[in-house]
Image (cartoon, rainbow, N blue to C red):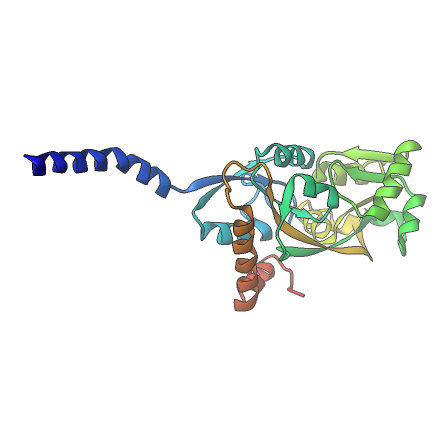
Length: 263
């Protein structure tokens, strides 16, 4: 009788515990921002390409106990959602103020040359940062410029010598419009060249040789993420994954598929 009673409790406990064990084994969903930032990110509904950063993230996060959901967001809203934890992961250049709401990985997911573009027919020459003062500037809202350029942007806001936009494609249109909304804009040189080519305006756009800075970008996790319990361990795994991809040639293969080389 005692044996039957024990068997009953063992079976009953197994039935109760099973759903909990199954739930534990399920993959957690991570929310990542999806942004028009070629060739690093391509929004899901706008291109057959995924983008360099997304290819790497899909590979590294895909090897963990997570699934990915990309959310198409403008830059400013990305910042807000990383501050609230509505986004779990984003790719950022380093900015000290962001350490208030994100934890940075240590291995760059990619590096980008930061520079300028103008209308080719304007024959603008940029040899140093101070040349920017001469021209009306187009600022993509939410984009983190270098401190030197941000100083100029803030000064131009005071004198109303700036035009602010919210979409890269629209800014190309404003740069080429008659009359022009602005004469000069800044972004990753890789992005400027790629998108100008895709829009069919590469021959009308001059991406300047002058490079303001080579900016490394890192995988970051929101400090308020509800899906990543051990943030340091998560980022350690991502960092090691990126290092491994660089060593085994997988990283270089991704870059070359977008016309870039690994330096």
